[in-house]
Amino acid sequence: MFLIFKRLWQVNWAEQWQYRANLLMYLMYWLVSPIVYLAVWTSIANVKGDVNGFTANDFITYYMVLLICDQVTSNIIIHTFAYKIQDGSLSGELIKPIHPMLTSALVNNIAFKMLTIMGLTPIWAILFMLFKPDFSGIVLTNVLLAIPVMMIAFFIGYLLSAAVTSLAFWTTRVYSIHEFYFALILLFSGQFVPLPLMPKLIQDIAQYLPFQLLLYFPIQLILGKLSADQIVMGYIMSGIWLAVAIVFFSLIWRNGVKRYSAVGA
Image (tube, rainbow, N blue to C red; front, side, top):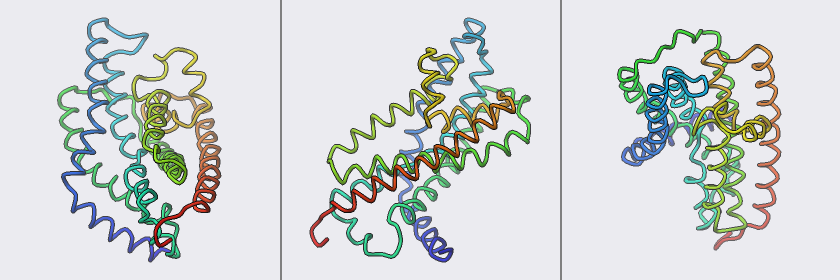
């Protein structure tokens, strides 16, 4: 299995380098919104002094860390797999002795992610020089604790997004469904605004959903804003939602493949 993943990595890594313009467009797509939020909320905080206790530096550090966490935990499976179900090209992958979505598609996402992180680095450095964030509250221990959290968050997000993508077995409107799913992430993950600034109802709902694990939890962990109990609870919730995501994806995929049909299938 190791040799299979090694070969898939070599193929997908080389493939990603062939689509540099596409890579740049995706990177800009991911960066525009957080940078706009960063500029807007920082400006408001500078004028008012703070926003419900959030100072300008709090917003700067929050969104600067968010840019990194978002690149690590996000995925593009809807854009790289849904069309295969719709146009029938999945047929050739189903006869291979590997899972189409948990091997090649997964490695493709990781290869894409590595390149976008490389592209993010100089942009992040420029933002650092422009906004001059104070990261004095960050300690190495919290950063190390956040690494497995973000890895688990990536797999939670990937499996849930893969489950939504697999709805293409039933409907051609899967892209619209995924847009609604993405809107939920935007609302409950803390990407639009830190969750403490959201209405209490949203905060209460968010703590039971997986979306805050994708961004808000690792961001707060890195910034040192969580107590030991909150960190432990976050890890427990991550484990629970990873198990739920695995089961949910497996059910959707298994039933979807049973009803799949295409020319030559």
